[in-house]
Image (cartoon, rainbow, N blue to C red; front, side, top):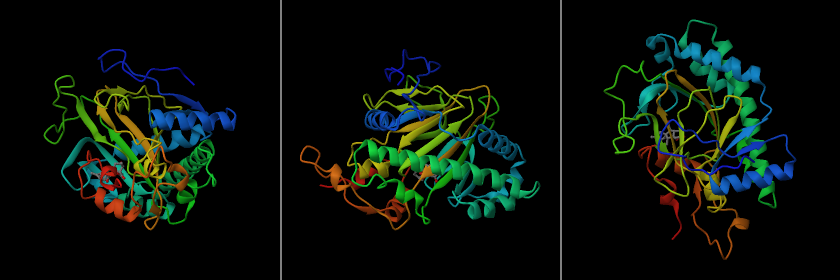
Length: 336
Ligand code: GA4
């Protein structure tokens, strides 16, 4: 593991920190131990030697850039985001905005094809199939990671988390986020900027939030922008160094709940500072709507008593769409 202190070396936004790196080719028990540690301490880690073929990533990246380069009218045929589909600037239903355009889809081939075919032009099968391949690989990867975490935690059933995502009814999502370069972002009326003194003028790509799902697996091109909030000092934003050959993995609210708070779902955001546009391709590992999420009994101890009340994913989803992006949703499910 790369020895790091998760704090910026100075207040300069251009200094990027390396996250703890976990190499999937290491011995499984070592990987499990380090993953558990990273999920407890940072809620985030960087994964290298992940096994997703570079060609799959490169092809979906170039096809995605081709999609975002199309005229707005064509892209809009895959929108408006309801919440799925193509969207631009507006995030969710409650007035959140960001300097990005995106494609948010259910992570399965029929759902992908159904939206992508509306775009017209090029053969929709090309983009759909590539995205479908990417989803298959990242879903498998997310499930493997969840299984390794289960082992690392010493769970009775190491598949306690992964089986929720392998379930055919899983509500998993795939999201492509395209952040235009700083200069090319012309419509600044809708662009949220950070108003605090130290960050004044920073343009928000995707505002601060925690991910509601179990696990997020993100790959971006070599353009910086991801920042995570230090779990040790809630006010400090840590800019993460980009690494296109790696995946960035983070714990979501549902995994924090199932581990009874042992793993932390950390707030993060994307900012736009770069001269080049940033593309991130994200898989959100999610249970089915009817899944009942509650702390695993093995995670509840005298030292760590029950922290969350059970909820269904459908219930959580409904609530999250009624709240702003920055809301602390899991707080509402704390047990008294
Ligand atoms: C944040 C994480 C994922 O990107 C996402 C987002 C979703 C959306 O874009 O529709 C939400 C946001 C995210 C949480 C609160 C609600 C819903 C926007 C928003 C304001 C796809 C997700 O699942 O939750």
